[in-house]
Length: 410
Image (cartoon, rainbow, N blue to C red; front, side):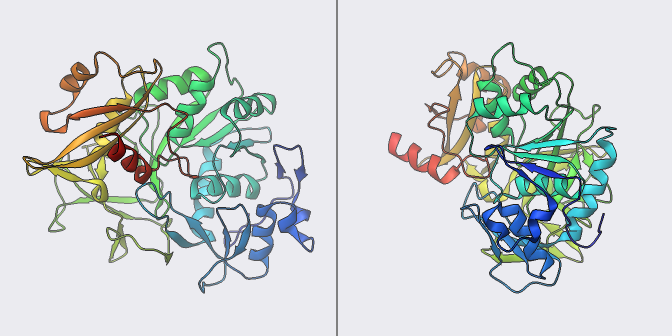
């Protein structure tokens, strides 16, 4: 495998939902974009350009000057406008090699994704599949029932998805359905609640469910294994260093909360469009404004994003942490938390939930009292069906849209 740029492996095949088979040679035709955006992506790289898969599904030359063997991907954009990220091909190729080493399969591998190629998680999985000689099935844009059908029919072994995509997929699955060919479920792009993990393991009984923490800017930071404690996103991915620093950028003791700083060979180069106020570099270390803690064994626990943090009565509240607790409820499929202004306490937390029973669970308040501190408990709850839930092309909840809906419900 070329270690500097992406090359479509001679044995790799892309199978579209419409039944087309696309091979490496199709990148060489005069207009590969008419065959598939990934074919155009590879051809642009071959000609020294830095390609970008746009939200409309086309591959184009990126908007800014980049060095050779660079490309663009998009952040999830769940709390604001997506950022356009520039990175080297090598920063992903290094992790392809690592991942293939633990996908220990003697037969040809088959991959599937559930999101759009414009999002970095989906693009990552697609490029990993095609550069390592696997069969690849892009299933973004299909209904969950159709995705399940393709995964079953084509005996998909490796599935890359976000927690939200998996909540929708498992909810749509027949109770007797089993995706027996799936060997690995790679979950990134959000918090995986325990209830969803159980549903995924039931749907894919032969699979190892590997949750990884990372971002479009960082790629892999941690990855779980069978010994990862409940609530942790695992320990450092290969060659990744993690520090937890306080507000004065001093390293905190194990178990204490602070800002997550990362040093690794997988980091992005720069933002080509947009910016993120919380993103900072210092002596080769990167922070994207995530808060967490490390235990004595190096397991990382996420607390939340600085950009979503708000205060209730002068206490920091982390919506991500509340959402993870709500999603552990057996009747809740999806949950989001937003803050609204309050004269007495500065703000209140409001929960928005989608449930299996199509109503707010009767034990909701008891559940919150059991698992959340008094100030972290939502003051109000609103029900939203899974069909109405606003999602971005990345497969993440559209928090701006959810906030607007809450403001209209009040």
